Each structure stands twice: as structure tokens, then as C-alpha cells.
Image (cartoon, rainbow, N blue to C red; front, side, top):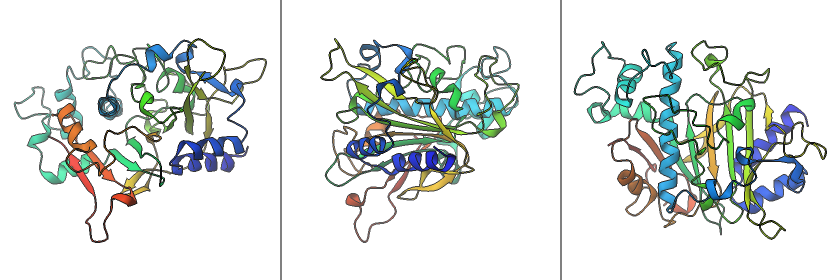
Length: 351
């Protein structure tokens, strides 16, 4: 496929709002049925017990992803400042210090009582910072809603997907004192709540100033595709097949073949911008030059009502993440949840 064809495939998957639509798209590109083009999640065939049974509630699983987006945002700022997040001396010793140094930018060597606390910020600052992390819903009529999480954090290169976004047990952040998500589960807790086929889309591009940056870990994979976007679809396999247990796999067709099955790389393409974020309550209207989008198809929210209202996802996350290190922007983008005279359905969660 050409670069434009691969980009077009990625856009179709972004705009698709049902599992059936995703399967139809991938079959049209002859990417669904050939199992050799799908790599084991975490490069381990027996991964479902570990990856598919982490969370008992769908809202808890979303919370896990939000923790990872906050980590990613702070790690980006740390590396842009020329400091390795793993540096035991020069990197922040805790999350509040990281926020104070890299977001508030008022660090003078001592963490004040009010330093690194979102509740101390003016409303305009909260809103501005929250624009780098978005949670928004989309839907296809007659199907469960899709939940999207987008962030302007460090992003990942296509070559690094297996070791970062799609890893299990790597414990990539165990030495980062200011990071919260250190368990190396690849944020897989939400997958079990995605429809019947457990489909999840991941699109990411590395921040351009991190390419060749000396603050990046020496173990981070390097490749000539580092400036390109990578994307993949995660799915569950094994249902109805002659296997003892189902397993997770992800689309990785580059370099894979019948003689070297399940060993390929994720699809990639060049593009200056991609529409990963919403603009107000219109999904995928804000284009960005780097970052990550995770789309969970037909997600099992306990209530399908407006995510901003009482009983919706936003109030539940308030309880699960009562004092987020960074503010988060919630967007209700489903047409079924809009009334003709309603105002823009966007809220900032910060305290």
C-alpha cells in the first residue's frame, strides 16, 4: 500500500464507531483473516489471563489509562528539559515536584506547600493544560458508545510499540519516581470491556524533539521510521477455535509472512498532522503533530447516558482519581446526547 492508502486506512479506523465497521474495513484491506499478520500482545501467546482479567469495573479501567496519560505528559516535559526521567538525582522525586518544575515552572529547589497542586491554579490555566489530555465519546446508532482517550505526551515510534504501548511485564517506568503507572501491563485492563471482539485502536507519533534527544533512555528502539505515525488494532482471538484459552493479538503485518507468522511490525505512514482530538463537542476535529489516541470500541459503560451528568463516566472518574496531578478535559461528542439548544458539552476535571 502507498503512504496515502495506509493513512486512509488509519483514518477509517479512527472514524469507525462499531466493531462490525472495523472488521469490514480490515477485511476490505485483507488484514482481518490472515492470523500470521497479527502479533501476540506482549509477544506471549498465553496472555489473556494476565491482560484480560485485571479490572472488575469498566470505569476503573479507564482510570488506569488516564494515569498513564499523565505520566506520559510529565515524562515528555522532563525529557524536553534535558533530564532523563530515570535520573535518580536530577529527575523529580515525586509527581508534585514534576508538576511544579515542568508545568507550573516555579521550581526554585524547594517544593512549596502550594507547589504542584492543580487546585491552586486559576481556571484559565487549568483549561489550557487540560487541553493536552482528552476523554471523549463517539457512537454508531444502535451500538454501545466508543470511549476515546487522547494525550499530547511523549508519543511512541512505530518501532517502539511492542516495548511500550503493547508490552506486558516490561515495567518501563519502575525507575521513574514521579510516575504512577509502574506495573507494566500496557494499560490492558480496559480491553475486556470492549465489545465482543475486544477491539481497541492505538495511534501514536513520537514528539519530534525527542528524536535523538540525549535524555531518552538508551534502550529505546531506534529506526529510520521514528518520525512517522504508527497504528494498530488490538483484538481477542481464540473464541470458537481449537485452543484452551483465548488470547490478545494486534495487527502487525509489516514483515510478517506464513514462514515468519506473528512477528511483524505495526503499520506506519507519514503525515504532518492527524485528527486525534475533539474540538468542543465535535470529535476528531483538532489535528495534532504528535501524541497518542486510544479508541475503545463499543465500551461497556455502566450507563450510556451523557458522560458529564450524574451517574456518567466523568463523575465516576472524579471518585476514582480525586486529585489528578494534571487536569483532564471531558467531551461528550455523541449526537444522541445533544439537545438542539444545549451548550457545548465539555468540562475540565481537575480537583
